Image (cartoon, rainbow, N blue to C red; front, side, top):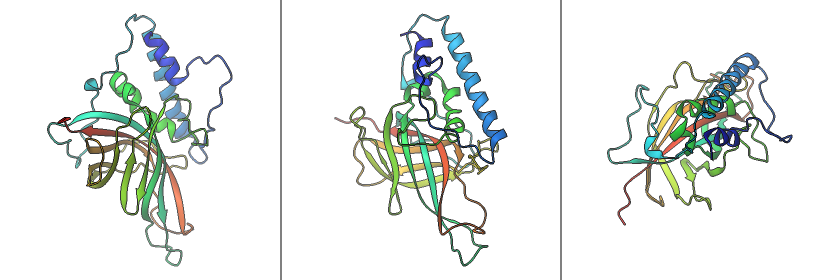
Length: 259
């Protein structure tokens, strides 16, 4: 497969039929959203054009993938761990409000997201990977579970089991495992991070560590390149519970296989 073909099928550039994609959701944030979408698709077009001159097939080597670093307060993975999987998460951050106290801050009660396999994109096109959340957060995730115009296979789900963040990567194609985890550390998203469809600021970057009950060898999970997801500062005019659209890149780090 030529690199240009790989890019085209992965990101649906130059589609021949009339594909159906999730609809855009950019109310209240049209200028920023359109800027993010323009930058994303311009980069895709540049990658496709450059790939036409290459004859070698793409090599999906995760050892070549490098997670973003340099965010103050977020430590690196433990020594000896290697990247097992990279996924783009698209879903909602969920909150509650005390409707009797409009000045109170909303309380986070977890998140729900569909995970899409971005491992090859991480290995081959890291600059594209970092822009996918800014694109994806502006497309509604409907019943078709398509990540906007990107044709990326579903690789799992993320949700909360009570207070515990949980990742299920036991899909037929991957069978990586199920990971209950706990927050190890967090850091504010960069000031340049993409906002959500209504201008919501990006949620923090996170390092999560696996807890007892994990299946497989995943030890660390990082949430980076976040887009949207933050609640308003107060509960004024907010309902008792609400969701905020978000997207992020999740990096799953594994320990060596001792078998």
